[in-house]
Amino acid sequence: MFVMLMREMHAVAQLPDGTLARNGGLARLFPSPVRLTCEEQAALEAIVHRGKANARTVTRARILLKSADGWSTAAIAEALDVCQATVTNVRRRFAQGGLEAVLHEKVQQHRESRSLWVSDGPSDRCRL
Image 1 (tube, rainbow, N blue to C red):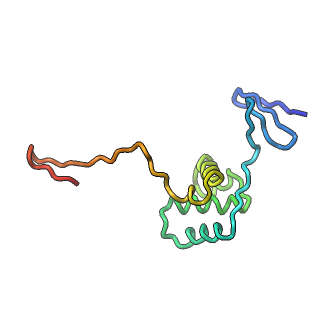
Image 2 (cartoon, rainbow, N blue to C red; image 1 turned 90 degrees about the vertical axis):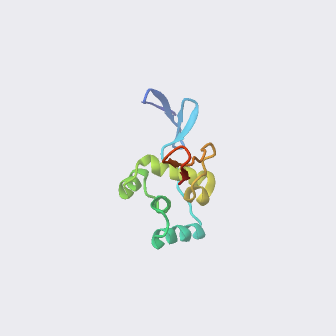
Image 3 (spheres, rainbow, N blue to C red; image 1 turned 90 degrees about the horizontal axis):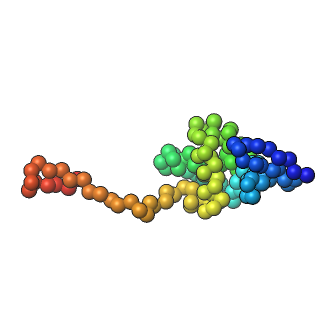
C-alpha cells in the first residue's frame, strides 16, 4: 500500500520498505548510516584530537564520527554549528569516494591562477 504525500508541489509516495518514491526517483526517509572501519575511525579521531588540521577538515571528521555513532543530521548540525546541507554533503562525499574524498579538497580544474602586478610606472613592474 502506498501513502501519497504532497511536499513542495512534488508527489511523494512512501513505499513499504521506508523509501520514498518522488517523481519516478527514489529518496530515503533517513540518510544511510555511515559505517567506518577501525582504521578510518582511528584516523578521524587522530585528526580531531591532534588539532593540526585546518578547521574544515576537523569539522568534516567530527561529522563522520557522529554520523557513525548514529546521530541525526539535525543533531550533528546543531552540535557542530553547521548547516544541515554541510552534514548531508559530507555524508554524500563519504559514500561516493570514501575518507579521502571527504578530507582532501578537490582541485578546481577551470580556475586560472592570476598574477598580481604592482606598478609604479610604465617600466616599474614587480610581481607579488
